[in-house]
Image 1 (tube, rainbow over the protein chains, first blue to last red):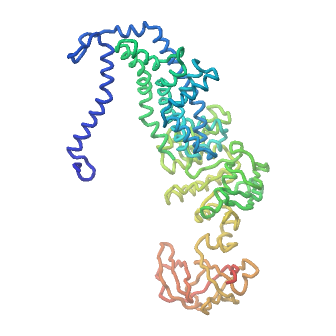
Image 2 (image 1 turned 60 degrees about the horizontal axis):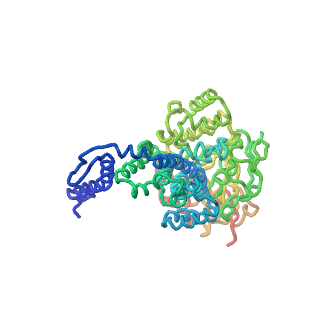
Image 3 (image 1 turned 90 degrees about the vertical axis):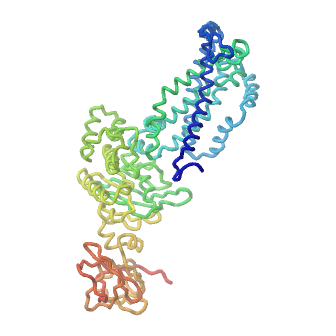
Length: 276
Length: 347
């Protein structure tokens, strides 16, 4: 080993980790940078390293295309609906999984996990035939259900772990002080699990926002969300339009993460989990 | 004397084990009762049934002459101090204490006044706006106590509340709890495995073993007159000698006669004469009785205000406490000033 004794990295170790850090940075940031340049490029030809002309015309083209703006609107309507529904459906389930040893508990956990562990397209095909008979194809409700599937694993597993980490005596103390079961949940359990639930909400929101396969299958031709729109953009428009659009597609992620960065990485999570 | 809490023939099974078995208990108003026993004896289960966190399989729980056997915890006139305190980490000390009052629909001002008063009582006024993580273990303990007391419960339940404190603090908080109890007249049921704690605190002690109460009496009675051999072993230090009782002495198995100068208290009809298991407190062993039987000192341990001496008498070891300031000579003449006899199972 080139690392020094006692686990302190030597010069070689420091060099290796620096190289690794830079590699990760390039790997993550370079495509985004290229995308950004591309979106504002008027003319960018070989062998120029940077675009020789800058332009906003791709952005105006995106704004002027009616299909594109409606997809943005649809995404911004559907995603919050899916996220809120996921909370309503999954949080009680997460609590039950964390607190009660009911028969089939393990099976429920595995099933939820399995929906994410296998390629989802097979599931979507099966769902499509079911949705035809239920008249859910090309309907908002169908798209919401399809997107809900991708959020379940986040909204169940993460909060379940958070609920399980809360000592039952904290809830008993609330009952002892005169709070009913529901009030105990909302005044003690939920606030203590909030940091983890926040993480789950963000991941669910992004999973729903980015969902394209199922939405495409169930929603087309009329329900076209932003990621579905990307497919046709790539085929039918110049590259630059797709670049503009994918930047717009990543705005929610950036916004959400910067909004909650301090809450998630700061004290709240740590505080929630140090007290036993 | 009015009875605040009555348990009638409580039985509870958990995971196929009978944890509490046909247990009955009466606690008078303003009394502090300790449930004393080793871990697994059912004392905490009993307390949790009183608090409403468990429902007995059979039997009745009566508080203030009302049947509360099936009442959920939020509607019981009880309040609990949990072993790990169970303070809510997202609330300040004052919010923790005020939580129950806010639920009762008191105005903000009323809550603030009451909380301030109680925090003063437990000496935590300066910590009102701290979060539980930021205060010491002793302060957390007092916060939990204040949170329970503010509800003005008919019965205050304490589940090993001192076990997470260090030894010195434990004694101090113990005295504070006792003083608080006498000042407020709160009826308390206090669960502990520490017999010294029980002896120091309790008006009456219920010594528990295997889901039953072996003895329920004052600290003095439990110590001086242990009703069963289990109590004799569990509470305090006790010498247990198998011997044959004759008037005035105990004949040990090798024939040695240990004089018993005082009364022998029989704990069953067969405990008075013949083969018994004799229980002698170390402080009841006299080391300077001219009529005693000779014994050799095996070892002695000075423990500050007293001295523990282990003696060899007739092939068995006998433990004695003596207040003498000087070392005990290598051979002494011993006798017992009083003893309790228990029936000996036939060999």
